[in-house]
Each structure stands twice: as C-alpha cells, then as structure tokens.
Image 1 (cartoon, rainbow, N blue to C red):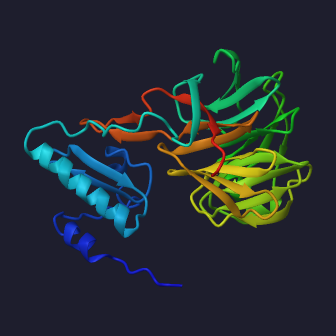
Image 2: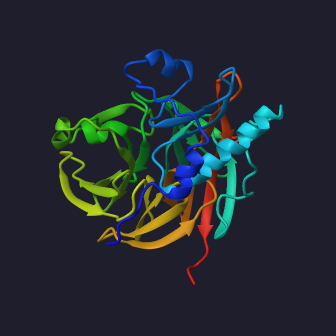
Image 3: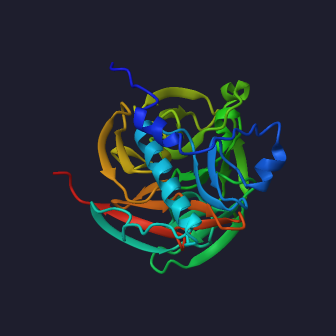
Length: 324
C-alpha cells in the first residue's frame, strides 16, 4: 500500500498566511462557549473584532484542507475590503443527478434523526419528537414525544425501533408502539457497556435481525432483537457513513458525497451514487430511497449559529436510474 505524504507542501505554504492560535477546550471552556464550538477540531478564521469570517470542522486530507484554507483567505479578503462574506455559495438544484427526485417539507425544522415507512405512513424523528406523515400529502397525522433523541429509526413491519447515537457505548434501542409512540421495551447490547465512544449512525431490519451501523468505522453489526447480542459483524470498507436502510437486496447508507449500496450477505460495496448534498438519514420504501439532509451550519457576524443549508428541511424520495 502506497503511503500518503502529509502535510502537502502547498498546504504548508498556504498555512503560513495565517496566525495560528491553539485553544485547549478543557483548559479554556469559556472560549469554546464564546465562539459556539461544538465539534472538534474546529478551525476559525476571525476578524479584528472577533467576527467569524470562516469556520470548518473535522480532520481533512491535503486536498480538502487546501480548499478550506483558500476559502478562508477568500472570505478574509472580502472582510478586509468591507464586503459581505457570510453569503454561502450556491448549490446544485437537486440532491442527486442519477435519478428522479421528489420532495416535500419535513414535519419540523430541525436536524433529522431517523426516517422509515410503516403502515402507509412515513415515520420521521426530529428534535426528540416522532412524527407520522402521510406520504400522499406530506401532512403530519400524529406526533409523539420520544424518551430520548434517537439517531435513526427502522421497522420490522409492526413496531418501530429507535436507536440512540450512544448504542456503541451501551445506550439502548427503544422498541416503540406506532399507535401510541410509547416505549414497549428497550434492547441493550451489554457487550457495549465497556465502551466510551459514541458512534452509531444507522439502524435497519432484515430477516428477523436488527443491523446497527457504526458510521465512522463502516461496520455493520447484526443484532439479536430479543437479547441485543451482536451475532455478526460486516465491514463495508467505507468510512464516515450516515443512515441505514435495506431495500430487499442491499443495505444502503449515505455520506457527505454519495449514496452507497452494499451486498446484504458480505457487506461489500456494489454501487456508489454521487450526491450533491450531505445525507444524514436513509430508508428504502417501494423501490425508492427516502433521504434527509445533514444540515450545514454556519455562524453569523454575532457568532450566532445559523442553518445555511437547507433553507427548508425536506424529505426526498429518490428513484435511482438503472446502473449502466
């Protein structure tokens, strides 16, 4: 395997145009709060009066890191010339160019945390609320409180399952009654209780088993729905996935750049479809894929957190074209 060289010389040259200040979040929590930092690492480019000119989060390889540095410099030039710098760049008009897309407004404005289909309705989790939606009209027919915010939803055809982001650290999967929204029982994977990190990013049902996706690692965990025990693990070979569905033949998961289809028996990738928007949650229903975006957030000149994209939270139904 060829070893990747890092840092790249171009990136190093660009980085020297900045004055770098390192902040320890544990030693200086007041600065974390002051600049509304919620993900690590976060790199902020600030103006003379602490205006937030540019921000990006997460570890980057040389090419995307270079792009972020160039964008920071571009925005800083606008800032120093007295021009507006906060207007986000335009984006493509559709989430995917490889199929037919329909959409309708989500039941609430807020970060999506699960979608599935059951009983002729879509079930959508947002902000610790569970919404039942009529797919014909997009109207909400019922709303229930969830016991905890969940990271994804699925169904066995009768009940709903809401998985917490902390499943990897022993947090439960909630079994929900779709008639009342009440928790009927919880499923705890006891082998996870020794872990500390959170990283569950999707859940789906296949042939009497639950499957939980560890998104950052690209691992599918087959779960006994009665005991919560992990009975098998599949490595998808793709990292940083989000959302999980099963279309009758393949597991399907999203990412910031693509929709992936994986072989249901081996977990190996069989198709990758480019997406124009980052996806947070995925489900399969009637030959289409239900998608909801991972919102893109920024900060205004007062450092207040604002949602840049989407302007309105939507549910997308994607009917893919046959692979050529």
